[in-house]
Image (tube, rainbow, N blue to C red; front, side, top):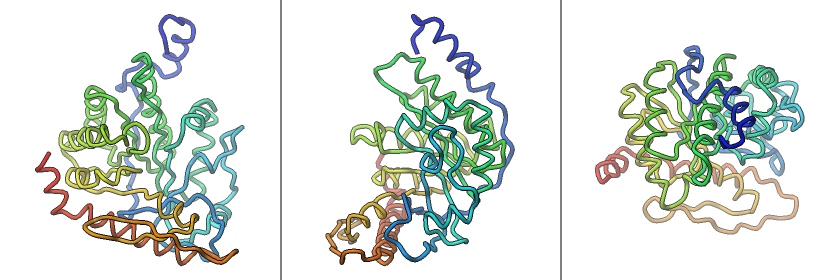
Length: 316
C-alpha cells in the first residue's frame, strides 16, 4: 500500500474498514477444543495403510481448498478423513499458515465466498482453525503492515461467527504491533486462543526470542488464561510454556522426515537427531511415522517441562 497510488490506497482502506482494530465485530464465545500438547501435521495420506489414531492431527487449510473458488475439495467429513488416513476420533486442526500466494487467494475470494467456504469447512468436522498469517514486511510502507493485521482480525471474526473455534494469529513486527494486539485481546474476553508461526521472519535466530518475549508480555498483560497454537520455533517453547496457560505445538518434521525415510532419536538433554532408515520399495510407513510422532512429542514435553520453562523465563 502506498498513498502515492491514491485509488488503490483508498480501495484497500475501504475493504478493511480502516486500519483500527476496535471496529472489528465482536465474536461469540466459543468452547475451545481439548487438544494434546503436540499435534502432528499431515500433508497427505500416501504411504500409510492404517488410520492415524492420535488425539489430533493438523492439516493445511489451503491444501483443502479449490484454487479457483476457495471451496473445500471434500464433500463430507468421511471423505476428508479417508484422504488423509485419519481415525474418526482424531480431532482436526486446520493451519492457516502458508506462503503469501494462497493467503492472498483466500482474501481475494471476497467476504461472501469466504463465508460459504467457512461454513463448508465447519461441516467437515474441523475442531480448530488458525487464522491466515498475513505477512508484515520491513521494506514496505507501514500501511502494508496495518492492512495485514486488520485482515487477520477480520478473518478471525468471520471464522468465529460461524461457530468454528479459531486461534487468532497475532502477527507482529514491532513493539507497537504487539501492544495493539494486546489491547485487542485484553478487551475481548471471547478470545481465548492465539496462534503464531516461527517458520519465516520470526523464525530467524536473531528474531525468534524477541517474538517469543512479545508473546509472553501479551499473555502477562491480558491477565486471563490463554492458549497459544505454535508452528515452528521449538527453541522458544520454554519461554511460551512459562507464559501461557497452554501451548499446542503443530509439529511438521515427523511427517516430512518419515517420507524421507528418517527416524527421530532423542539424544543428550532435549535434542533430536534424524537417522537414515531405508525401507523396501513400496513399504508402508505407518510404524515409522508413529514412532517419529512419539519421539518428537517427547522432545516437546521435555522442553515444556515447568522447571525448564521457569528457568528460561527467569533468565530473560
